[in-house]
Length: 154
Image (cartoon, rainbow, N blue to C red):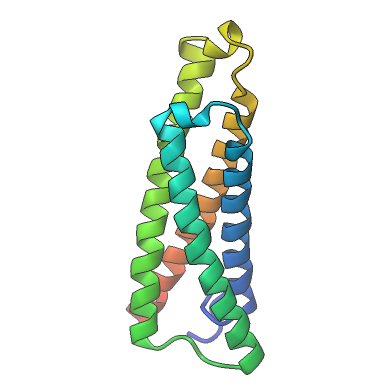
């Protein structure tokens, strides 16, 4: 399917990968600048998951950039199989990490009111980092679905 938006080696694919990389890096940056995030397992898992997401997406963004510049086709069944597995693994890990961090943020803000009792907790940063992680996951899930669709079309 040469005309499908978001396929590997296209401008749409490059834009998806750059978006994934940017939002994963933003999540890591915001969470890393938050005081005490390492005390909570869900936030540590979020940082680890976004680190993997950032590395995978950056590598594929570089590959997409090269394919655009050299006018190479990246839609061979072997490459698509690799992209499908990598995208699904990173998408599932990102969703799990984002959901667990989101659960902790909701717990802190709404249920046990930690954010009111302990104003030194950077709850706004925790929330922002979680939002960035969900955006990165949404872009990753989009890529995973596109890769699966392309592989199924072969």
